[in-house]
Image (cartoon, rainbow, N blue to C red; front, side, top):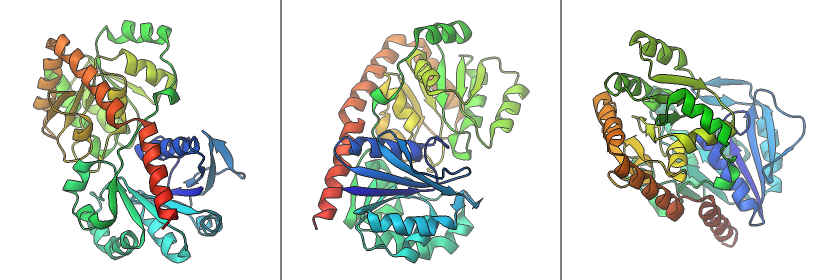
Length: 370
């Protein structure tokens, strides 16, 4: 079984949620005997296919990017060749350029699309893109939503429910480096025995300004890992308020991230817009058995985090609610520990990479056997 994945980015050049999910699907189904190829755009592409985590990565030159949409002239010919060799094509949405490539090549192969998110921000461009999007979504054979929450709150997915199934995102803890005790000791000396942790890209929908505002009323240590377009603005906001309980670490190696996840007191995940369709780093916190704080935005974040069971769910864009949630967990360590245990149990029940890979493997088989 030969599967071609197609998306605008891939590990290791960019480390976003979709890239991580695509990697987990490819490496998980590879263990079941699937031959996966990932085709992605890249600023510095390799001249040769690269083996990565049990699958093949092929990168082509990214010519330019507009409204978060990468374009590549070379990808048309490469996609056409790889689609001819594949048994099934797996798209990852949204990426309007892939819609165009799909229609230009018109591959006569079964197609699966993982629907990672609605398009939220580019409302004017969305009106222009809508006909192509509708044609693309109706042309693929099957669509996968990553949570029932997102399915129930997305008008786009509701209109496509006849060919749709739900496969939750899963993570493989064995793929993560083991936490290092010397790093754990270092972080405890630096931030204290207890601290909250955020991991993610500094994008408009992550709600980080509200987390920084919350730090004024909840003077607990908050460690922020990541980078992105809003980095300068966020650091300026923290400096303006003279917050000495906010620690920006930037991008860190995976082994450091594992150590932070193992050491932190809880995960705070303030994403406030539906562009945050799931929350991979929130799920990482559950995998490490940590109590969670997230916002109710009608997406997979509240499928991972169940209010008062695995953590606390607060209204979006509400810095006071975020500070109250952090303070409540801080002042109730026994309940916080129980929530962390419940988060771990929910991860084991619903969100392992093995379960996700098995579900995709069975879906691939069903489409190929039609």
